[in-house]
Length: 299
Image (cartoon, rainbow, N blue to C red; front, side, top):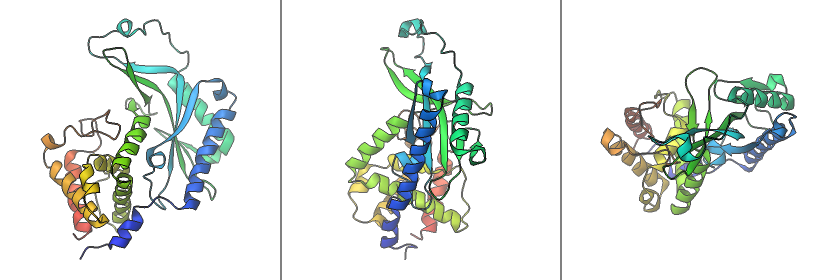
């Protein structure tokens, strides 16, 4: 007999309660206010938007947090196709912005401190954390810059780029494309993609709470990307969450036995590969975790 009933699994597919949702929305609103009210940043070209599990509506009850991207749009970083120059792309006349990423991150931190007070704001390597209270959720604010990935025809894909405080190299991602693709897959799976993602995330928390030791490289973000790579038919063709969960585990396990069967898997944005040498996780990590999850569920 399986460890959890169908009713329990179904309950874990649901988004946060109304009260939790209100706290999440309050957190986002207050960050927007901090940036717009700041004397320095109000004169800069920026945009503030949610990203991560909250923005993607895949956060789980009682483990909700919020990620906010504060992006500088008055300048940009870029990558060019092989053998192309800045002149080829028509950007050779674009001069420096006169404003550095480190200055921007410092300004964002100062704006948050002014809004929330110093003891409520913690500067981390990759983000700036605002502590949670009864009114708001803990919030990670990620200062980024516009990033352009150019194509041969001079068009570009717009993403975000930022530099951790530690000299470990820049990080590039595509948060808005992630949101758009997730909405489309959710629509194509009768709203089951996001529910199945919540279920996998909730089970990760349950395993941790129950003292099951698993690889720390298995992150909530990774789980969402793994469910993204599960075929829609698994979400559409089975009638229970028990069966959808089972089949998703089986599929991910079978496809991650060898590099060849998952080497083309991408993030939800479909603009970055899920498995490559620079990742903190590996195919083998995922394959092992699926066995642990299966055994934990007593399938």
